[in-house]
Length: 142
Image (cartoon, rainbow, N blue to C red):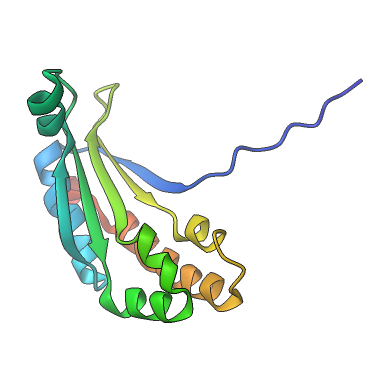
């Protein structure tokens, strides 16, 4: 008897950048800005864990990226979608020491939260924009 396996649904897009943490954060900010995203929140997760729990963690920052045009269109379609905004972008030191990981919440996962067809189309636009930013991040090449 064979059992069918189902693929685990993905909810992020990621890339490992062969550069240091600080350079990758700067490059991530610039790539997002080039796509019309501003950073409206920033959480230094390592510092928060150190301050609140007294534990050491690898460098990790969560950036709340927002493209006002996309956000406005999304909340016009589904007002409750604001509960999952902004788009979180995580920049963290790679555990294997191979560089820095940049991981972005995949808007396609957000679109699965609603039956609104137009939200799925919008999520596709946002996904393409974020993917363009993700592929543009490589501070070691410039």
